[in-house]
Amino acid sequence: MKVVLHRRYRFSASHRLHQPGWSQQENQRVYGKCANEYGHGHNYVLDVGLTGPVDPATGMVTNLADLDAYIEREVLAEFDHVYLNEQVAAFRSLVPTAENMCRVLFERLRAYPHARLETVGLEETGANSFEYAGESRENA
Image 1 (cartoon, rainbow, N blue to C red):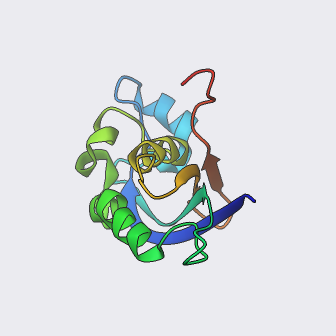
Image 2 (image 1 turned 120 degrees about the vertical axis):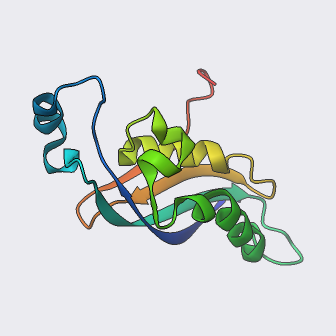
């Protein structure tokens, strides 16, 4: 029996989409208003998908209190109410697009010890959401 647990978390953060080596015009062409030099913010919804055996004693894939504490420590403590470009080390050299954020978040969460991380989803706006399932096993 395979059960997938999805748990959602919310955080707010700001960012600026731009490549430092590009001209302002090129950044504007590629990223539009998201290249604004003062940045902009989002209220993100993080969706974490985990699988594992259902514990016969608890009836759960994982204890949600354990998962919540892990997400708080590994993600929310560093990502909530910050300017991603400067306050999260990974984004000092990586454009903090939602696609890149999914990859960074997946790497941060893959070591969760009580279940297998399957996917990380990130809703950036009501119209934009992204999901990352890690590299294929052949490329890992």
